[in-house]
Length: 292
Image (tube, rainbow, N blue to C red; front, side, top):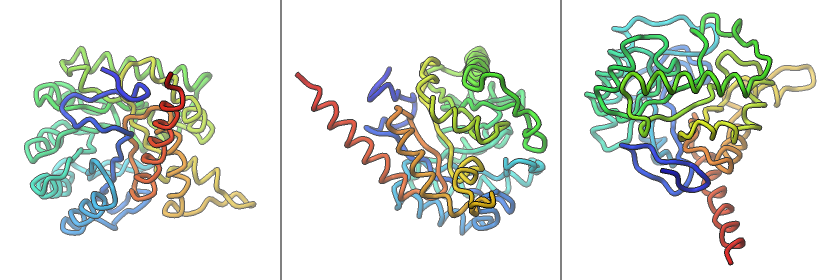
């Protein structure tokens, strides 16, 4: 089923009349943009509520950094970080997504109230992930991914980044469906910043419409990423700190919303929440102007 500008609907989740905004809660000491800021459970829960107040439709909770070069944490530590935050936010009525590459964490998070599994590896990191999500009957994000963060920069080699990302996403989508996940519950994500250089990310943002060929709703996660730092770099090539890239993030949000993205994933919500509403108003005005 498609709706506004082909945005699509994800079975099992609300249907918004605009691009949705997913706020990020990193319960980690080492994430690239806000590492350590929300590492404490109480602070992470408070942050989730702040994001919702600022306009987030969903809150994405993760306990493992996927920044370039990051080493993995063990499963017990990831569970310790994530599950209490998911449980408290869900109990308070928040729509919670869990950001994890581990099937056990996904399963426990769904039991605690999470309603979406956002696996940056699309099931590639843990063979049990797809059957676990299929059994849970929750939506699943299939992101473009070529390998773990520790060495993903070495995999950023493309002849045709849009064509290759599209083909690899199609493979991931087919793998998820073959594993039992309802295609109506699948979201796709081009994986900006994952095994990609700045020029690859910019090209993908410029050609988001090409991803409609997969026929599934699109999640765009550009927030504070390196390619924005490259665009905003000073004359000597020094990029601004990640936390100074929120206006640039909102610019990508507006573009993604106009291109029919189902949702954007951002660290600071207010500007992006405003951007998607403005994009929707412009879209509606255009529809009215074009009516007979």
